Length: 275
Image (cartoon, rainbow, N blue to C red; front, side, top):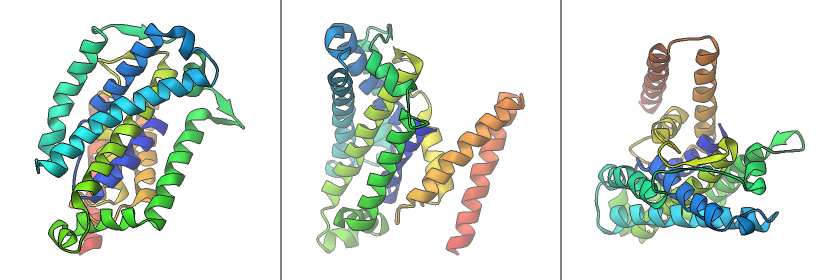
């Protein structure tokens, strides 16, 4: 659940502003493509302990973050509806990633990257430590910063927030850029786990899992207060449900119906609470 949880943190901020990001999977593919090209073109650099991993992470996060900023530009500056703006990158982003890699699957030979995805520290996987770090930083930001208040204000009433002096455009730029950076991080983690860069499948369909976790966690799609703890609980619930159904050999079609029913039930519970 680690990569999904990391992405869900970013999605929680976006949904709290009243937005949505359908391009999460494509952002991962773009960040993964950049990391893959770097590892193929400069294997001597990416294999250096410490420095190699840092370079791969920086490139993936930077590239995905730039495209996340483009989403923020479309939504915040041009005023395009978030579902339309991010749908464009959902379609085009993966195409760009496959063009960059020529549609090839790269085998990862960088030991630091593999260790990041598969290694352990103090009895927990490296991924888990990274996930916990992202969650803790996000929790501190949401509890102690003015930025968090701006996010809530924009999601609650954008026009009123703008009238009160909240920099609405900058807030939107920020949340979509953060989403892009987290997608780049999640891409490197997934590459380390799989031992390969496959831009055709990296992050494919993950946006639905991420959005579902945020919805189940209680953050309203109409915007408002972000519920980070609920989001992490939603990720855990949906991932445990998926693995439980798979371990009991439940047909995929039936499993999807069960997961959909859980999401609907969660939304109904939220609606009743709001009333």
